Every structure is written in C-alpha cells, then in structure tokens.
Image (tube, rainbow, N blue to C red; front, side, top):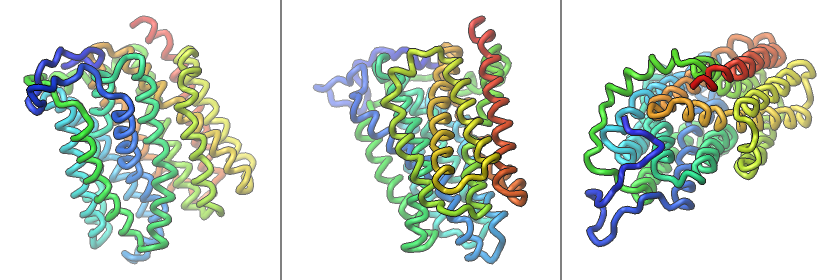
Length: 403
C-alpha cells in the first residue's frame, strides 16, 4: 500500500516532457477546481434520479415507489466502485484510474438514457455507479499525496462541498431537463459532461509515478481489519446514517408530494457553498466534538421537520440546518478516519466512502417504506438514527485516542 501522506520523489514520469520535470505538489487552484466539479457531476447522478421518479414511472407504466430503486441501484454500484478502484489505483496510478473511470461513466450514463424499461435501467444504473465509483476514493488519495499538507483539508472540504452541492444541483438540473426535454435528457447531458470531465482530469492531474507496484490484495485484506480497529469501528457504524438520512429526507419530500420542492431544493445551496469558507475556523475545534455536534444539529433539524410539519418557508430553513450539519460532519469524519488509519489511509477512505453510499442506497428504501405514514414519520425516524450516529462518534473518542 502507498501511504497517502507522503509522495515518493518523482524525477520523470512517463508522460512528462524530458525538459519539464513533474512538480512534487499539484497546482492548487486548477486541482481543487477540477476535482470539485467532477465530484459535483458524480453525485448529481445519485440525487438527480429523485425528481425523475414520477416521469420515468409514467413512461414505463409502473408506480413511482419501485422507481426509488433507480437511486438505490446507483448507490450500491457506487459503493462497490469505491472498494474496487481505491486499492487498484495503488497499483495502476491515481490519474489513470480516475480518468478511465470517468470516461467509462460517460458511456454508462449514455446507456441509462437509452434504457427501454425498469429492469434494464436498474442494471445500467448499478453499472453507472460502479464506473464513477473510481473517482471519489482515488481523488481523496490523490489529494493526500499530491496537494500541499496545509491545503489538504480545504481541498477535501471543497470536494465534499461538490458532493453535497450535488444534492441540490443534481435535483434542480434534473427537474429543469425534465421540463424542457424529458427525463432521459438528464442522463444524455450527464454523458457529455462526464466525457469533458475525463479530459479535464487528464489535463490537470499530475502524471502517475512510474513503477508504483502496490498490491491491491493487501488493501482488500486491510479492510476487514479496519472495521475492527478501536475508534474506527464506531465511526464506520455512524457513516451510513450520515448520508443515508440526507438522501432519505429528500426522497421523503418527493414521495409525500410536499409542495414547493423547487424552492426547497434550492434553499440549501447557499449553505453548502458557504461551508468551505468556514473551514479554517472549524478546523480549530476538536474534531470528535465538531462531528458529533454537527450530527446533533442535523438530528435536531430533522426532528423539527417531523414535529412541526412546517410550511414551505420554515421547512426550507430547517433543511438548511440539516444540510449544514451534514456538510460539516462529512469532511470531519473523513479527517478522523484518515488520521487514525495511518499507512492504511487509502483503504480506510475507500471503506468510509463505500459505507456512506451503502447508507445513501438504503435511504430511499427507508423513505419509501415510511412515506405512506407521511413526512413526519420519515423525519422522526431519521432524527432518531442521526442522534444515534452522534452518540457513536462521541463514543469513538477513547478508541481514537488509543491509536
């Protein structure tokens, strides 16, 4: 395994010009920009399916409920991709794996746009999730290796902001494309954007070091041991709840026919975009307390949605609080996992991101199971789960200190 905290010296990568040696660290502005935009594109394909459920169901002459599996299938494929491609990038190189995965996603996304029915669409959505799963954990490992240490937390936070902003941008774009050209056009546009993203990654990322030679098998063997590591074990239990609840609340809004969905989706975007600007201040706080407190804020906002059954304006404010909590907790938990894992950082983050999207896959099914009882039931169950996650993070402190 290659550590993600240190970069072996690079004198001449194969694709570098002889008169222009590869720099030891990546150019910050271009790197953070392209990684954040591709992060936004990647996870937009998860959330973008939510507003398309009704139109696709009408097209295929079925009920909307089963169409929540379009979100779940993508999420499961996405999680599998994290586990598969993170370790493979140790052997074949970060840039090579990211570029190949994003380019393949351009193809799989185009195929989703052509799906003739639900069964084929589910298989293609799983394949689409698998191919784009090559990006997030490998990008995180790349940041740990190639970005200057003082700028790593900001870069990770910017990427996480891209992933979270997708929850709004993906749904807004899907809703707009649905109104203009039909539900399939969202995936057709996505295919074009992924092709452009692959080209941008190839151009901006530093060439891979020759002869990395890491064994993916070693990383795969490390993952079960990571699940048993004190401190990490409790964090990993909390991880699926974090994103699963976030996806579930938006799915619940869609399935219960809550009014003002366009405004509700857009309201959270300013909060998401503001989070990177608060990174420096947040980094001064104890990371365990910061993550646990952020989860409690998310739980409280979700609980109030259930208790108050508010109108659109108050609901938008509560969703902003929920989004802020998730936006602070997610990068904080990545930082905790990475710092505790040491030289197993790459498989640890692959496992973290996989578990996040296992939760994201389960979220729509939980929302579908509870939606018949109304949005309040969905929100209160999710609030209880988020409070449990906050308790798990707080309880992880002793194990993290022991490491």
